[in-house]
Image 1 (cartoon, rainbow over the protein chains, first blue to last red):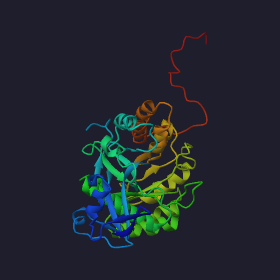
Image 2: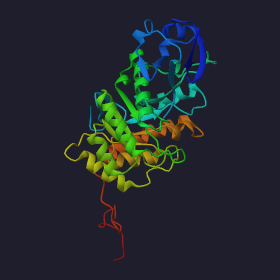
Image 3: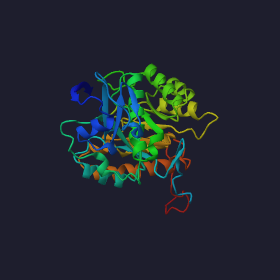
Image 4: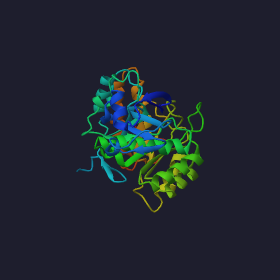
Length: 67
Length: 274
C-alpha cells in the first residue's frame, strides 16, 4: 500500500494503482468528474494508464450549483 | 425573424436566442432549479467546480437535473482568490464538460476575487488569469468591476466578453453606477459594436435587468435574484420578460427626457367657452 492525498485528505491505495482504480475504489461516477494529479489535469482517456505514486496530490472535482 | 424578435446573442463561437444567463446556485431543491431554468428561457447556465465529496458520494448530482442537450454550461471559477487557482479550476471545468460533450467546454466565466466581504474582483490577478486562459485556448468571459479602464485592459488581453458587476455579487443593489457601465460600453464597443458586454452580479429585481439592457448591454447574468426570491418561479418569468423588454426598448429609440410636460392629446377641438 502507498499513501496519497485526495482532496486534501490522506488515503491508502494499492501500489501501482491507476487513476481509474482510484475512482473505482472511491465508488465515484467517472462521467461527472475531472481529476488533477499534482496540479495537472489527467484527461479522461488517460485515467486507465496514469499510475499513482506515494505522496501524489490528487484533486477529484465535479460540478455543483453556482452563479 | 421580425423586428419584434430579440436578435441572437453572439458570445465568441456561440449564438444564443436568450440574452439572460442564469446561475444554478442557492436553490432550495434541484427540482425547483430545473423549473426556474425552464421558465427563465435561458440558454446558458453557470455552474461551479468543487471537490467531489468522497464520503457521501451517493448524493444526487446537479447534472442529473440539467438537460445537457438544451443548455450550454458555463463553468465559473467562483471562490478562487489567485490566478493560479482560477486557471486550474477552469481547466478542470473544461475537462468535465469535454467528457459530457457539452459546448461549454470551450469557455469559462473567470472570477478571481480579492476580498471575502465584498467579493470584489482582484484586477491584477484577473488580468493575469485572462492572459493565461486565452493562451490556453479558452473563450474567457470576465467578471470584473465597473471600471472602464480595467474593462478595456481585459478586452485587450483577449477576453471574449467583459462582464462588469452592477453592484456586489448577491447584494441585490442593481446597477449602482450606470455612468460607469455607459463608459464601459462606449470603450469596449468603440470600432467594435458587436463586442459583447454583459452585466454580471448585483441584480435584485426585474427592473435592474431591463435597465442594464436599456443601457445597451448585450445580456445579463444573474443567480441569487431568482434563486433566493420568495417565489423563484415568478421571478424567473419576470427576469425573462424584463430582458426582452429592456432589449426592445434599447433598440426602439426612446424619447428624450424633458423638464416640462408635452400634452399627448390634441390642443385643438376642446369644448370651451372661449
